[in-house]
Image 1 (cartoon, rainbow, N blue to C red):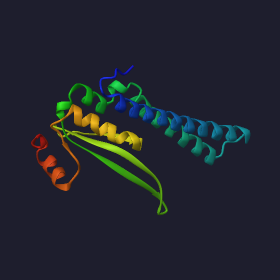
Image 2: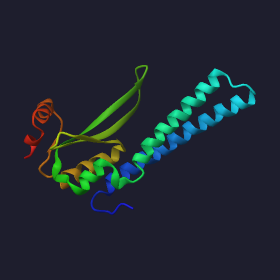
Image 3: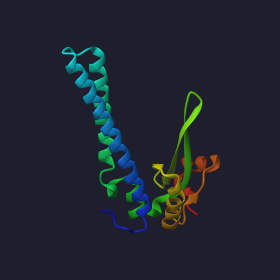
Image 4: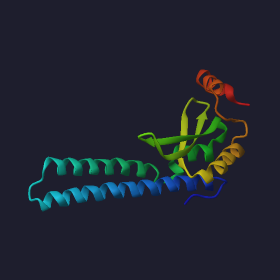
Length: 167
């Protein structure tokens, strides 16, 4: 179980991702079972039922892999960095990705980008909009020397020399 060392909001966000992945994997496995059931009911599997069942099972396995990545929150890279080496963070910012289907906005995903001295980048994705500010405050508190906010100038400076962003 995750200890509350100021990272409870990050842990809760990761739990939300884990729950979403579990539902998604379950849906894929259900689709695979339905395709298999249809194929068995026909007494002769058609290429369509085999293809749909195989695609759903493959997607279920892939989603299960992502789910296992989030199984132990303490092992997720962004959580480990914030807990163990927050001084490695030199730059962080929030972002939003808007998803559209045929020009109609269907959803918006909130996320936080975190960049380290060694040039590596991490993201905390699928954050509930009401949690974003708390997560940013947690990062700001744990990494007070890190630059906050996104601009092309900061991105260019980071890509040229990540360590130069330290305040």
